[in-house]
Length: 53
Image (cartoon, rainbow, N blue to C red; front, side, top):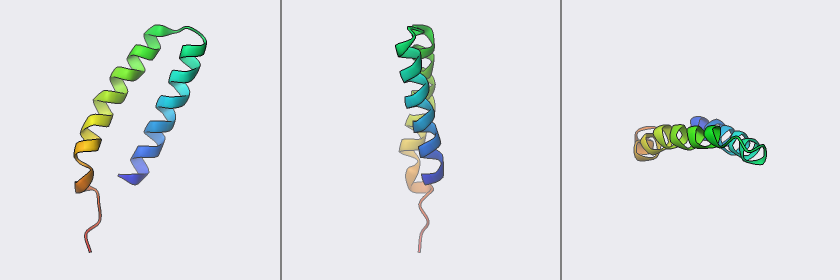
């Protein structure tokens, strides 16, 4: 999961920041919805991605 979290967070922060600066509010809403749609399941399934000794 570690290798999936950083690209998603980077995409969300960079794209949402640029969209906010340029006033593209539809994209901000789309990014937020997409981020939640992928982020929540990844958050709740993170224990399945941790390597067990």
